[in-house]
Length: 177
Image 1 (spheres, rainbow, N blue to C red):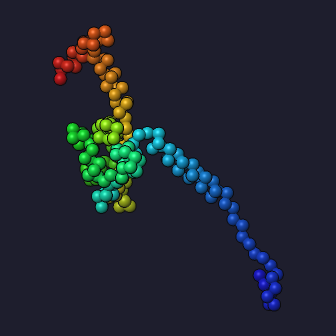
Image 2 (cartoon, rainbow, N blue to C red; image 1 turned 90 degrees about the vertical axis):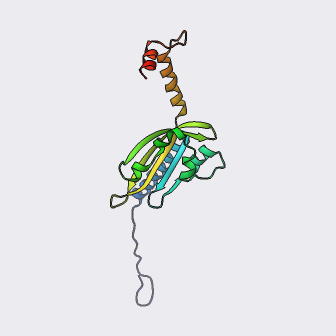
Image 3 (cartoon, one colour; image 1 turned 60 degrees about the vertical axis):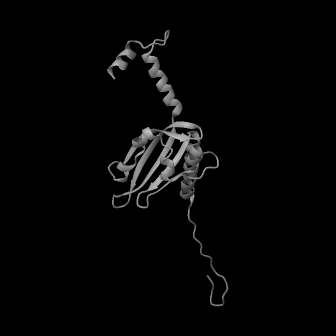
């Protein structure tokens, strides 16, 4: 503040504590770092679809898992073209687009640069403020090795370890089908 002659006579200042704000910033940075590590821990990546525009796009990481290190992001048509023809129904997004489901999990085979891989695709519907379907977000995770282990365990329960022939359980399964 200045007096009538323009000489400074007082200073006014305001001090605001930013400790809580800085703590929130630190927590957000930690969560961001954790989220960045998640896709690195699994083979696969994220994708999203805007329902109104129909725009579907994979993350760079998922595109590179599917098409190689220089691959560009995939749109829906190019992604679906890589789904095994026998698994097309599992890849269908129609129930989510229609708002019949809010989330689901699908498993299907996908053609990648690493040959055909089993993918688990977790998907979730995001609704707009009126409750209408707005976006679908998801993550595709390669679980081929787990799938192979399960198939091997199933095979060992159906066959004799010594001869490799069908055992009682294997015969029962084979002739009940």
